[in-house]
Image (tube, rainbow, N blue to C red):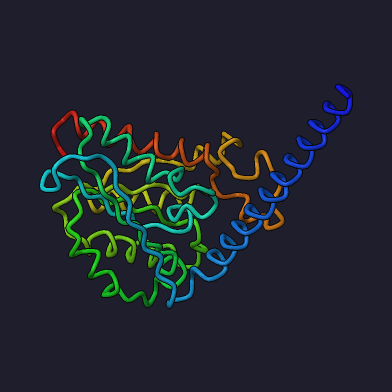
Length: 251
């Protein structure tokens, strides 16, 4: 009888484990399909991903507002829980460093700019200018095809200046950095008196930051995106700069 009970327990455990694995695979597959849809359509002008996140419980009038002008990396395309993307991690770190200060962020997928910079309609960004952010992060360049560096750089500078200079502006390198692309972003930061954060070293020197480090993706390009660990590292790189600005009372 005791042996039968053990067998029943083992059977129940096996069935439960099997169901959990099936559900995980099903949910992960659904997540991958959604991610692929974003990747495949983010250069379509009709796609306008806007995310709103917040952290902390301070008074709203003393809150810090962050705007992120980025691509699929900033949209957290590969992470299963949006709380694990670098923006959510970053605002939590900022809030914690400032005694639970209210920190909010808007994220706009501007990958359309990377592909159509020659004739980009900047007016679509007017609602984001009205947001009046205290900090703007420009995370772009990954999808630029190196067609006309001089024109792309001037258009990028125009994009940065579009939001004025009354805020803290941070330009990152592309995550999939290349010397030539990195230099464009460096020059754009210098021309606009913006801070510059190099995140390309994460992709180049730490394979663990890639989503495909622990699991393979049918879509190789999708797997090259930063996974949860990569998002954490990007947030840490940007926070070093933001933290210094906080201690200097710049923000």
